[in-house]
Image (cartoon, rainbow, N blue to C red; front, side):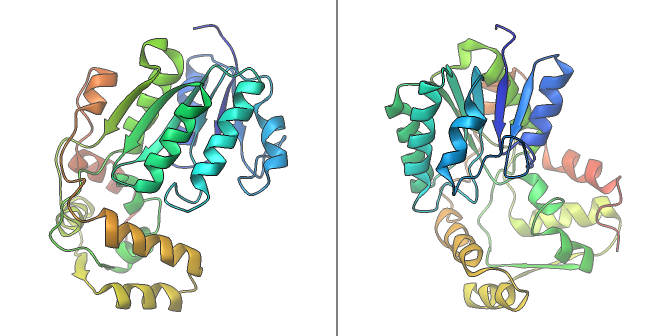
Length: 274
């Protein structure tokens, strides 16, 4: 692929930062785009989009807060249209499995006419070490409205590797890859593996959706975030995404990272120490 600039929309997030590091190691020019960059990119201010895209050949797009929100598909469609006008040839879109909103956004990219790679990812392993679950785990108990439904948690490093492959190899254009870990675990099982890796007791407790939302509210979580989490736990985590898929192997030619490997690696940093 021609050595042209790649713009990362969401370049400082769980996946974007990892993708940037990998592309830079390959010697490829990378431009991160977020509210704090120059030029800035803000999903809620469309006037910033063109300046963030101009001069790039392709883009990785991670939408915030989540493709499940009502205005995501319209934004993704408009961004894709502007990308084409700016001369971009390809978009790699981070999508979600089993989300109707995510599927609408996927269709919006395709409808724009730009070449695209859809990376449908399951729940990130890193939500336990870099996201909302971290503080409860450190405190010794994670409470979620999730029972016996299993999820094939995906390592963000695998997503980053898949995105780099999509952005640097034209064979992956106009394809969909479902990225999951190699086995499915319940949240209780995931916490059990984290506790074993951390070498300390960490409990998991299933709670009602009402109690979960009330706890978030008491902790000062904004209502739109609570509503999003209620939708994700109440609708998407119903078993529809429990199946392990071959997307990581299909695009990378290697197995996906197992959750136990992720847990041991994260625990070695001391992230879950009391």
